[in-house]
Amino acid sequence: MIDCKHVWERISEFLDDTLSPETRELVQRHLEHCEVCSAILDSTRNILILTTDERVFELPVGYRERLHARLEEEIRFYRN
Amino acid sequence: MATLPLYENALSAPRGMGDRLPMSQSPDRNAEAQVIAAILAGSTHLFHDLIRPYERTVFSMAMALLRNPQEAEDVVQETFLKALRNLHSYRAEARFSTWLVSIALNEARSSLRRHRSLESLDETTTGETDRIAPELLRDWREVPSEVLERLEVRKLLLEAVTELPMIYREVFMLREVEELSVNESAQALSISVASVKVRLHRARIMLQRRLSPQLLRLAPKRRRFPW
Image (cartoon, helix red, strand yellow):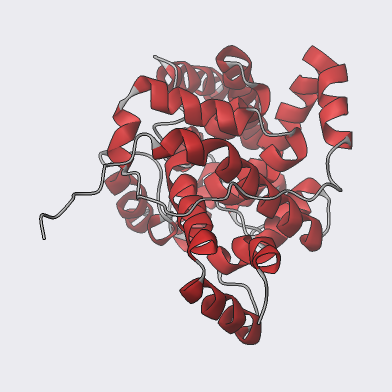
């Protein structure tokens, strides 16, 4: 058996599925019986989905137009 | 000139469905290689299409590192201009996106050094040895993505990410937003694979610690059944 602190240290690798099969099994078994660690795992997973949503980093108005206009200037320079 | 039907199929479809492509819909590498060859052979205008799938994520990373939309936009423009000027030096062993993100990372770091060297230096040299415990909860109610329609929630999340110490913020953005692998992130940051894993873990736990109490208030209440 492993304790809660050891599970917390492995949350990230558990989410990425990069733990060894043996360690994953130990963490999995702990999670089945520990509501605190289960809640930590669920909240971390949920928070990752929310923080990486594209709406969090809003593009400034006119961003794309300015970018492509600047690139077009450079591309024209190449052509001439 | 070779025809480019694969490329157009691969890149034109996602434009109408939001810009962030899940890995399964990332541009086809062979198609991308064809377009790069065409650009180098003189069809320079295709560069507009080549970079379209990366416009949003490169801005997000620049914004996360610089915390200023104007400076972030300058970094993005400089990144894509450098990519165009140096496209001949791109080698296909790396993904094009990884090459592009490495340029963006360097540009953002240079901009930080120019604008506020002391703050960024402080942030990169502290905090790596502390253990970080997560926020302890008894229960978690799923917070749906619809909460992002609310400005104050988007602000909450943006602040949580942009206030991570720099060494954690960089890794977080490379792995989670730019979708670089652990190895690619290690290479882009010139750090070990083990450090990438540790920093990513800490970034995630720091976000969980800060955001879970705030977000829990936004989660739908459980229904109480009458039996």
